[in-house]
Length: 196
Image (cartoon, rainbow, N blue to C red; front, side, top):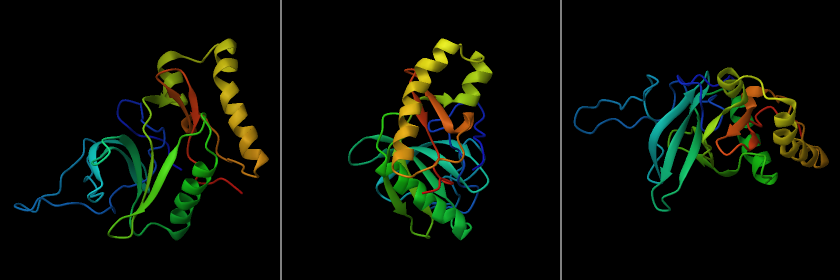
């Protein structure tokens, strides 16, 4: 998947790889105008369950948004794959949701739900993370010391061991798919091209 293109280099999920124009957009009832996010794209209509708070990033096939669950008042991240996307890309998003849900591990981003929107677009509801992907972190803070790497990657190594034990291979592990949380934890993101 494409890398995050958020203006400030940070991301809530490190995977801004999903909607660039085909998502369902809620037009203003009086003017017909479509609300626009700060990345220049229209905000998606995620239905009555979620309120879109802000865009996190945008890529070639979709976008990631910070949202609030209206009834539970929880903040989440939602990755929206635009309607009309390649069927292979849609299947990748379904597989990503299924794999991440099954692999529940502290070093893997948590996935809570997969929603089909009114126009057929898919939205994956996941844990909202504060921080930035490893590529952005390294650009701002420089490369980690060996001690930092050993400490932070212990959880990632354990998560990869768990994945491999159940027959899942990530196939796209790179700095853009590893997320450095503000508390220092490192999490694996984006299972879209994983092989089972």
